[in-house]
Length: 427
Image (cartoon, rainbow, N blue to C red; front, side, top):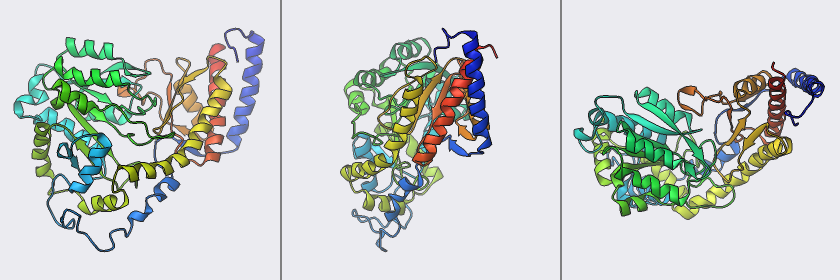
């Protein structure tokens, strides 16, 4: 469909044909949901051996009775797994409850209100004449933006490139605006674009602590560290670079098993310098007498080391890869020879990011919903829900069956075509 060179009569005919197809789809009353990146039932089943795995033995290999209070950082065996995932020393990591999102919220709240390294480092003190500000690569993860909104932290955006955030833009902002206290990062299979940060980008991010506000902190959300579809691809190690550059206080890393075992009952990890973890522990000790160590021990028995974890994730890839291939096949078949949309093939993670023609995302998503296919709301991948070009759409194909993904994508490409033709006609 070459809209720019099509005659008016051709556009009218295309609209009539596409509208007829769309109305026929609506009559089918389908109900499919591609809104969130959740594991499918089959993926969750892969970890069902967690049930009963302890066989009544609640003592860890290190001799901890996991039924009791204590152990604010979690059991050492669980911390070691987190350290292996993030590529850090076991002393630099704390294993907690099921949600890394909770840890991100708490870390940001602590940094703002109490300071990671004493009250003098609290953002409310270091930028007391204005609100603290975070840099947000876009399109990005909506829940990161929600945390900032909840804690009354301003957000400024930089474009996401094929190698990570536009680092020229990031460095300029950090140098020129001392209200900037942080940068959000999903460095591997970035949500939603699927971008893997290049080695150069990782090193430049690690170096930001040398030019930024002294309380500046990279929030390194490595949610998809082991979520590869085509074999494990290690990410450049930001902590190694930070050690070389003397910026370990400027990085906090997060990871979890939320999309590895049972999404609502996993183990989350937070990692940073000794000084930062000390500030975080001080607040954690007020909130808790220790995390769920029984659940940590269950995970340690199921996934005793990184090798076992990677083998487990190969089984996840077998479930996910056909769904992602189905999405990409529909996009290639319908849009590879026209300008109705742009996307990138991805090798892991949970999403595919699709850019429609400007000013069409809301219309396409509304149209798809009326035809029975729910998509992430337009604007969700931008701070404050505002996509200035109204074009980015996040596709999450993990939950529906392969047949349902195929059906949903037929509806999606139909909506993209119909919305694009109507826009060209001025409707």
